[in-house]
Length: 226
Image (cartoon, rainbow, N blue to C red):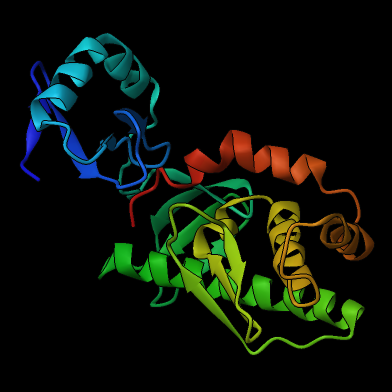
């Protein structure tokens, strides 16, 4: 479908999509990147969707004004690493060094090297957590995959493959461990039944607090552009 914008400063891009299951025009603003999507039922003219967006313009702009902008961290900026604000500073050597309160990153390819370091640290922490929880259940998993997912923090396949968002390394360790326990529990319960949540409780303990933390703070983990 064509490119459309709400007029103003700045113009707001609108993404239009059709769905055979839609019964009316709906509007959604992504909590992760601020993308404005209009979903149309079959046969509804695009103009109707654009007019609908215009009628909601004040609400859309108000929501976007509160949305955390994404930006690429550089020297002098602080990012959370395992939940701790950590300032990025130039390295005197050739290796990245994580110190209390700061991370030393060489200047050559700084952004890519920091990203790679965070992914490797995430894999290390997630592998340790998954090994622990899988042992608690007497289960094994086939692999761990890291991605930069928008809609979920983790998943588990029927073949025992575990997938996680690498951005969990930005959250406090208790949050990463909860997500690991959640996905490992799917090795025995591929559902979200009461038995599944009982399994999570058995290997992890209470989980309401980390779930709530992700609801309230998850968007911030996506505000850093890598």
